[in-house]
Amino acid sequence: MSVAKKEYKRITVKSLVDMKKHGEKIAMLTAYDFTMAKIVDGAGVDVILVGDSASNVMAGHETTLPITLDHMIYHASSVIRAINRSLVVVDLPFGSYQSDPKEALRSAIRIMKESGAHAVKLEGGKEVKDSIKRILHAGIPVMGHLGLTPQSIYKFGTYTVRAKEEQEAEKLKSDALLLEKMGCFAVVLEKVPAKLAKEVAESLTIPVIGIGAGNGVDGQVLVVHDMLGMTHEFNPRFLRRYADLHSQMTDAFESYTRDVKNRDFPSDEEQY
Ligand SMILES: Nc1nc(=O)c2c([nH]1)NC[C@@H]1CN(c3ccc(C(=O)N[C@@H](CCC(=O)O)C(=O)O)cc3)CN21
Ligand SMILES: CC(C)C(=O)C(=O)O
Ligand SMILES: [Mg+2]
Picture 1 (spheres, rainbow, N blue to C red):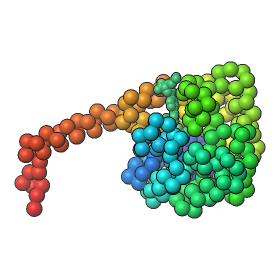
Picture 2: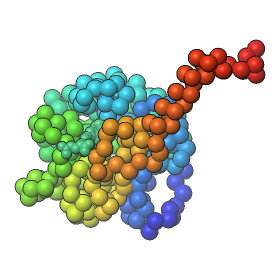
Picture 3: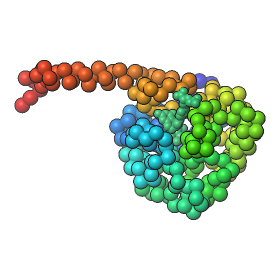
Picture 4: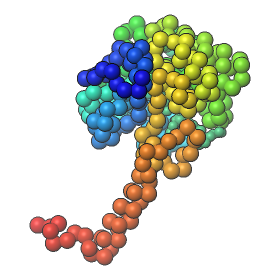
């Protein structure tokens, strides 16, 4: 099951559903800029998420709430210019889809038209079903996002595991089914018990992409700066670091500073 059975020249929303059918796991990472997206795409990552986590990682905000639709379009258009193969999904930011379905559709259309992205993602289930329907009716693919939904952080107060209680778990299961029934092409499950996430993945035909949702789902997503070890103060249990860029970059910046101060850089060969 672990070996790719098919070469996908360009990933489409349909390829992802195919991958699930064939038992091929889906790899997704975030990217917010051209240079990073070029590397992520070139490495064969299936889906690039232009996440509203840019609010934290790029802009330094405490939460994802402040980032605007204009900011998301700027990030997404930079990413789109870099990619050859990956499917690019863009988060609808807080405030751009919750008020009413028409505004949700207008926001989704702006993302598609002004960035060239392939799909949008938004947080929530039943509460946002009319908005999701409206966007889908315009022919825009929608990815759902359930479990820990950071745009609702002030409702919950913490980033703890979600859906540990029976009632919340039941709501999550019915929301996941609703998203599939409406026509979403995939759903992200964030920070929920692995057993529940597996159950949801097995009950759906659309892929379930997990972050802190265990190994029983159809794919995984991480924030690229986290998995590269750049955000060394962010330490959730679900995070696996594939590089230690914080220390490598610190070493590089310290060496550069030393070389400049010592008049070692530039050398004779590095000037005209
Ligand atoms: N850098 C970054 N990585 C992310 O994965 C991410 C963002 N930013 N911003 C938007 C959301 C917020 N996400 C989060 C935020 C916190 C935890 C978390 O586990 N925080 C604490 C534990 C909190 C608690 O248990 O009360 C931790 O252990 O770091 C997980 C996902 C995921 N997203
Ligand atoms: C953590 C992922 C799923 C996300 O929504 C983001 O990066 O904004
Ligand atoms: Mg997000």
